[in-house]
Image (cartoon, rainbow, N blue to C red; front, side, top):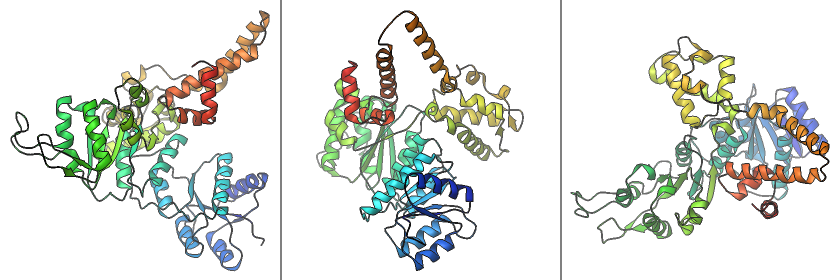
Length: 468
């Protein structure tokens, strides 16, 4: 056999065929194997490939075992793991075993080809870096939506780091779950995780909560008390709703991040700590900086790595699997039989707006576990406050209504004798997409550019052209 740069192994012949055809169409020579044993035999006797694409579930030897065997012989071959189990465990296990990347099934064929091309580039640059995070299970974060796959990848890639992370997302999207995952999957996982919600504490107590106080520091301070920084020493401190932190406390926090030292309230001796900071907010911190409500230097100190958590309406394909998970969880907690959703109920839930995001869905599933009359949840079992919400128009828009409206608009413009209608339409189209992208990324221009498929410079130029 010639030394094709890409080898594919999957017991499913249809998957092998589709991948081979797609790679060949992209001028990437490849060869496929029905089982890992044949691949390993060829690896022993012939020239190794540059990239291996392997399924995770195969009869005799699974993809993780194959990955280990490959890296025993050729540690630098990038291995892409395909899996139909699209949750954080799958991402974590793939990274843990040293996979270059993982590809959730069913996959977009263009995405698969692009991923193989990235792996080939990586191999040809002879990079020796492997993504091998030592992670443990976290079953609370699940999802198949592309935006959630990005979150999983970020958790995996950060697993060997103690770098500061800023989590951005609306209330109820699961920011604290992601913070827990980042901690559990980090070198600090055996140490303490401490969470503090800035919005839930009176402003005059935040300083004492964070930094502790000495006896007699203020009225009611009957004894010295450790703050959250000391409690989290060696571990992780999660500061939720960081945008609500008072400016004077922001100044103290910045000093701790700079030199790892602080003074308790009423104290005179410096306290030294080693703490990883994970911050979260639902607010637009860039806007708060511009308004003078958040320190710019603290923003840059925290915003080393940013993870955006999508709203539930941005990941509608995950609603059925999330609901099934929450129904199972509620049944276990309440010691009752697990309920399931009817097809029509799933359809209704997938088209609701979900302003409370994942938290709202979980609460509804707990309600259904107690209140639904049968084992299969039917539409009439849904709580009234859910069904009375306006149904999302996303599905009809995707079905082509906007194109019908555009055609109607064009007819009107042409019948009226207007000229240059294409330029007018493009300008309006770009303005609307820009506004929506900036809205969904909370004003973060780099993220907005990525969502639109533009470079940062293109987005900046368009903002000027459209006077936005």
